[in-house]
Image (tube, rainbow, N blue to C red):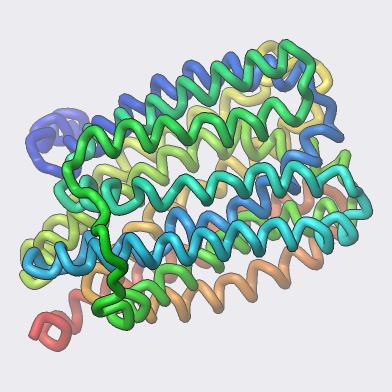
Length: 421
C-alpha cells in the first residue's frame, strides 16, 4: 500500500529531486564499494586513523567554506534581491575561504601535538588547498539549487564521485597509502568547477561589492553555528577515541563508521540538499508548508529507514567477505552506529523547516543543548572501548532527536500566524 502511495507522489518536486539524488547515490555507492574494498585491503588501521584525523579538520572547515549559510541566503532570498546578493556572496566567499585555508594550515601543528603524531601536518595543509578553488563556483551552485535544478546537482556529484574514486583506486594500487584519499580529494574538486560553471550563466562582477553584507552574515550565523555543532557531534567520537583509546582503535572505529553509517548519512545528506528550497517556495503559506513538510517526512520513512535497517542487518555477512577478515572486530560497532541514523533525517527535516521560516536560532539552541549532552555521554563511554562509544552514539540519538522533531513541528505549525505575518 505504501509503495503505491509513494509512486502516486512521484510528480511532486521533492520526490523528483530526491530521485535524482538517489540515482546519483546508487551509482556512487557501486563505485565506492570497489574503492573501499581496495582501501580496506591496502591500508592499515593506523592509516585509517591518520585519515580520520585529517578529515576531521576538513569537516569543520567545510562548515564555513562549503556548507555555510552565506550561499544558503541565495536560496531563501526574494527574487528581486538575488542579483545584488550574488555579487556580495561571491566576494564574501573569497574572504572566508582564504581565512579557512590559512587557519587550517596553522591548526595542523597543534593538532599534531594533540595526537602525538607529526605525520598529519602535511596532509592537513594539502587538503586545505581545496578552499582556494571553491569560491569560483559556489554562487553558481547556490543559484542552481535555488532554481531546484537537482538534476544538475546530481550530475555534479556523480562526476566528482567518478573522478574521486578512480583516482583513489589508482593511487592506492600505486602504494600511496593514506595519500590516496588526500590527493583524490583535492584533485577531484575540479569537476565541481567544470559542471557548475557550464550549467549556470552567472559570472562574478568586475568590481568588488559588499552591498547588504550585514544581512547575509546575519542570516548565515545560525546555519553556520548549527553546522559547527553538527560537525562537532559527528566527529567528537573520533576526537575522543583517538585521544583516549589510540590511533589504531580510531582506525577501526573510522572504518566501521564509513563502511556502515557512511552510506546512510549520504542518503540523509540528500535531504539536506532538497528540503530547504522545497520548503522555502511556500514558506509564507502555512497550509502548503505543512503539506510539504509532512510529505517530506513520509518520503524519509519510505526510503531512508529501509536503507538503514537493511544495511545494519546484513553487516555481519558482507563485512568479512567484502572487506576482509581483519575488519570483523568492526562489525558490532558498525551495526550500532548504523542504527543511530534512524532519527537523523527527521531531525534534519525539522531543522530545515525552522530555517525556512527564519527560526534558525531555535535550531541553534537545540543543537547546543544536544551537543553538550552528547559530549558528556561520550566522555564517559571512552573510558571503556569503541563498542561502548558506538552504543552511546546510538542511545543518545534515539532518545534525544525524536523530542526535537516533535517540539519543532508543534512550534512552527502551532504559531503559524506569528511568523507568517
